[in-house]
Image (spheres, rainbow, N blue to C red):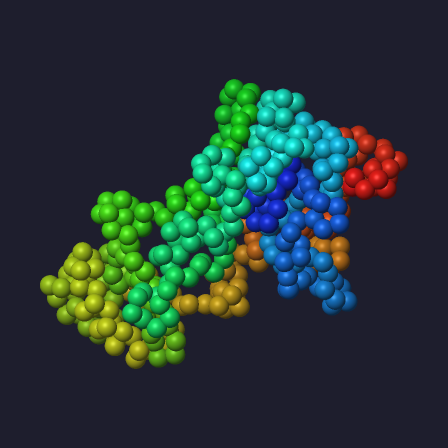
Length: 406
């Protein structure tokens, strides 16, 4: 039994931040019921190619994007723009512990599915709203997407080649990181609300905003600005507070060197055949190395090109200096550590035979994550959920389906 197997979650969200949070709860054992539009479902089902291929090698309607965030859930199709559909969702909410939604602010009030409406029928309900900008403020009514939030929220100003270099300019992170981080923070918030409910019996509304999360996750870079008043500049792969802490060229590619303290720098200098660097007044401490970055980095670059990436990694690891290659995803999934940790798994799938998944990073000794279900087909569990949770007879389900409600 999973750690959250006693919980039922009603997932009304689409795309990534909400579904990601729902998948975490599902991985931990919760019964997550994904409510989708009849006919089309979650937008990301169509966000391809690539699409999952069936047993005959033909594309299914399941995009890889959708498959990344929806395992261990059950899919129910309900048109809640219709009164009967609204009634069904309210009845499901009355029997749920958590609702997750990412509609525009006020968007569900017209259907009687907003927090205040559902709280009236289930005072213990934890209702998590995920939006671009939150429930308050001048931007509250705006739609918010990860890419736009990365720009507005400052992340892109820190990401990319510095001014003066070829290809200089801001770039987004290669995955929708703001969505992912919002999903993680939302999960933490809901678990905190569950802990409070366990003590008081009272549910609550969780107001999560992509912009809030993006700003919160600027971490040391935000503090670099707040303590100096100077906006940090783009440094490419370099670190604003640590030197050397970036990529360097090798005889056959590039590698990453992450020197975290003065002792590691001395060890690196010895492996590089330049022990005098560690005693040079310009490079003696990290503070001095940061101040003299422009002098040190070219010296290191001149030294690293004489060995291969594998040679640097082997020799520096032996000396206790953190470093590593720059893998593409094919190389990453073949890395011995990735293989040893089982970070790629396969789950049985009704169309494809099996579907690959990236494993959950959560390792619990007593209640480990179980991969119970592949990301569901659209409406795959409609009859089962409505019968099991709401007690609807097969004839009533068929009537609702014929009426277009399901």
